[in-house]
Image (cartoon, rainbow, N blue to C red; front, top):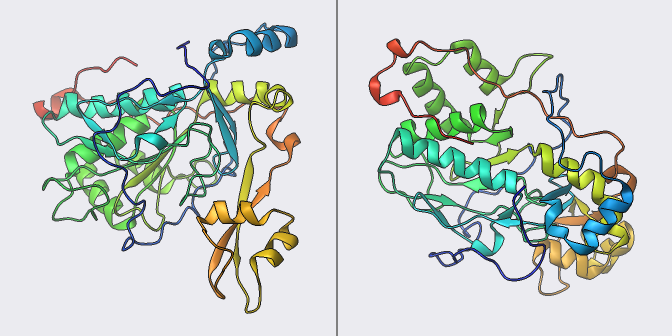
Length: 365
């Protein structure tokens, strides 16, 4: 297990790009509505032994006190109401750039899966402009404006590959989308990582699916990826507003989620993580004040201000604001182990039927 530190200065190179406004003022509204943790998992893959198997409560307490890094990354709670412990910062690299390094923290599994997928694209189609990487999570997780999710180290915003050297948050369309590289990246996420969902605008989904069919991808597999299988599998690629400028990736973390589940109560007892919060949306009625909303939802005025980036107590009628709500500990400290579905790989393809340029070397996890 990789050693990480729960506190202290970042150990990776800083971003070469100054933090940008996120999203820009003229961007399409960002919709996290498709990002939920309620999708049923019809079947689970065989889970390897967990690094903490066989350790007693006393062992875990001692480790937390003496060598917390030895416990590894922990994704706590849900992506919409969670926390992060022993976070790993996405390092700088030759094939990607960090838009906001201060909010590029995730679990070891998330960072490894993202880097593996980027490396797959470079191995198959070298020479692309570096892929811009937006927000992962804050170092300790929790709410990260302007998102509802990105709270537990398993979410990543990623730019598209462009044929025209597109900048971060440029709208992708038929005239500028690099279909080959973008599909190679999406395919690597699906087949070589424990990806949970990928949010992509409908218009770009059509471009990618048409390209995938044109290079001989299995039609039934593509149907399951883009539309799911009724009653059995949800689609992996889904539409949500605001994702024509970037795609949103969420990973399952078999190790970090399970570690977080086992360690949650102890972390709370030691006051090493804050109680995660979920969020709901409230549309302000005429006459309502920030104090009234705080009393109604039993939260502080300051908490509502932080969730919405408000510098004053003034709110506007008919405007929608996020209300942070405390998550019940018993939900987070579930007695049930984490369940992860099998990776959704396509049927084996004959390499003889594929152009030589399509064949990529194996990327070792």
